[in-house]
Amino acid sequence: MSNCKEKLFTEFNAPTRQEWLDKIQVDLKGADFNKRLVWRTNEGFNVQPFYLREDIASLKTPEALPGEFPFVRGNKKNNNEWYVRQDIEADDAAAANGKALKLLEHGIDSLGFNIAPDNVNVDFIATLLNGIYCDCIELNFNTCKRMSLKLAQLLCEYFDKKGYDKKRIVASIDWDPLEKMVMKGKDVTKILPLAVKLVNTLKDYPNFRCISVNAVSLNNAGAYIVQELGYALAWGNEYLELLVNAGVDTDLAASKIKFNMGVSENFFMELSKFRAARLLWAEIVKQYAPANDSSCMMCVNAITSKYNMTLFDSYVNLLRSQTEAMSAALAGVHSMVVTPFDITYEQPNEFSERIAKNQQLLLKEESHFDKVVDPGAGSYFIEELTTSLANEGWKIFLNVEDNGGFLESVKKGLVQDDINNTNAKRHDAAAKRKEFLLGTNQFPNFTEKSGGKRVIDNPCKCGGKQEEDVPAFKAVNSSRLAADFEALRIKVEESDKIPVAFMLTIGNLAMRQARAQFSCNFLACAGYKVIDNLGFKSVEEGVDAALAANADIVVICSSDDEYAEYAIPAFKYLDNRALFIVAGAPACMDDLKAAGIENFIHVRCDVLQTLKEYNEKLGI
Image 1 (cartoon, rainbow, N blue to C red):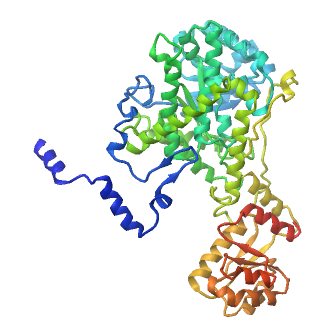
Image 2: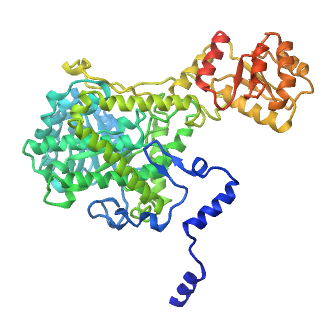
């Protein structure tokens, strides 16, 4: 066997970097290497098209081991198990309990209960947890932040009454008042001292976390991956410092913090984000001199993003969330919530929740993602991404610290401004189709109707108006990437008449077909009815066919050279009986404009703004 291996290794010579580059240049046929193949990320660094062993020779991450400081390769050594979590609206204790028991029979091993503050009482908790073996699963609770301490006390009383071993209780309370400060601009500083009381209440429960960092809110507001990473670290450090300065032991304080982080569609970047997050959090906690390295472990609950979810073509959300779930699973998270595909327009039903659960079970039962620890380790690409994200995330963390910490940065509006600017950039990119949303701004379903689906909000259940409800600081403008296109399409759908766009295809076969396809996709983003055609012998024939089809829009589709011949005659023959559009940006555009042609659609268009203008011209 050793001889075979020796022969295998000696038979092939490893190509050098220059040999790779020479081969690539040949294949590029003169195109610029940096422009064509180097990925300019939104995270502040470039990604090369290939990496060699020498590229990671100076990196520290490949030397890390699973379950050992700094935990870049995960908190576990022997497997990659994670909790499959589903959240339940616990408005009625008995109903929520019945649903929970049913879920536990079908693969869920982590339950999340959202409890209204008025329901935080002994009887409600007893009914809610009746028949649930609390030491065999993970339990998570969310209620009004002012009631979280009382909830913790009631849970401790319930566990004591049932005689549970405190070490076997794996649970969390989602107490994160800073989230309301970041997202809503509300002043919550008065309740921050509750953190110490919460931690002390649960100090005898080593696996019961009660301080949350809901960086997922930033993800759902459009934050870049590195922004979520950097701000999550600063957010967590704010709580850790608060606890330690109040006299809480470092190991106890760190063991009570849990990170709820989002997962977007960027597969390898998200996988690397969680690895970088564990690495940096371990280094942060280490500075507080904990007695045990295990206190430096980062506990992460991953939640698939809402930011890229859509109302139209909503089943595509399943593809997005599945890719996101794969990233989180391979990255070695503690637990995961797959967001149901219909959450943007309705309260998830039994079907969508079951599918969301099964998306995780498939990764375990069929793909065996729970068997291998950190399968991405050793990949030159992933190790490089991990290190690059760690470096850029650390810059954000240090910038926050230089501005007085996370709390002070939020008070100054620095965090909110940064996230809002990114959200605005991404909406602008989506409008110009520089960022794609399949089924929304690219390849929409031509015939789909909303069917009455409308965006819903999930209001806070804290009940009565609190003193901090008056905004004191800047807030994050959280709006999904598809929201603008959805509003446009619904406006068209609710109009008196759906515009008909007719493709007047003429001339060069390849060009007219390509431009007709482009134009159909472009105009269908607004919900217009599009009619494609095989081609016409003359512009007069095409215009007559368009008018016979009651077209509101006529799009001439041909080659750049032929537009000089066809566009103006077609425009004049149409004689303002419909909106006239030229598909493309031909060299003769100035001549066409001089003849009175105003409308052109091409790859450099702001699709959203153009369609809004067409709506106005059509009286919508």
